[in-house]
Image: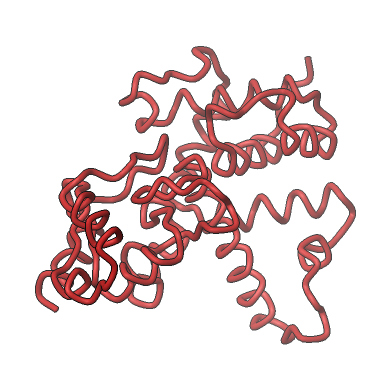
Length: 252
């Protein structure tokens, strides 16, 4: 069997971040699509994703070990990119575009006429890639389910930054700075009307409760107040980042 290259392993790591681990299989349409791009079988790509999973401490903490055998290259790629998701997102998109014989801009179907030139264009392209990567990684880690309400319709889900992207440049693309929320709770979180404490419990503000004029919805909010969020399979929310938001919430 032909050994996996660095570039192929980077693409596999990208997919590991974007596909719910429990849904990863040789029949998954995304795995089939990218296996064709890589010139690998879906079974081989799915196995590579499983090999990468064995390195994830979040999975190990849940007793999920992934596949038990793997290659040195997987460890090298994990060590290089696990704390640098923005680099993983951009590098993998460049590799995919190159395999398809396209530029990154063409593969992402960006309007070239509206993009600036030179270094500024690269900045804009990276922003688009990072935004897409963050959303896909956060939603997949929560198995496409709002961690507060349990809503599981992808069209009603958003990737919410724990600490606003404008305040923390280093964690803009970090999935551990993300929560999967429906639009109502996303907006309430951004406005500090709700919070998630560092011990992962939901906190509903008195201000929000006092301005609800529907008994059933008020009862629902009171019922989830103090409950723990639904946990993701991977990319556990960073408790230090949760603390930053929570302090602003209680001191608002």
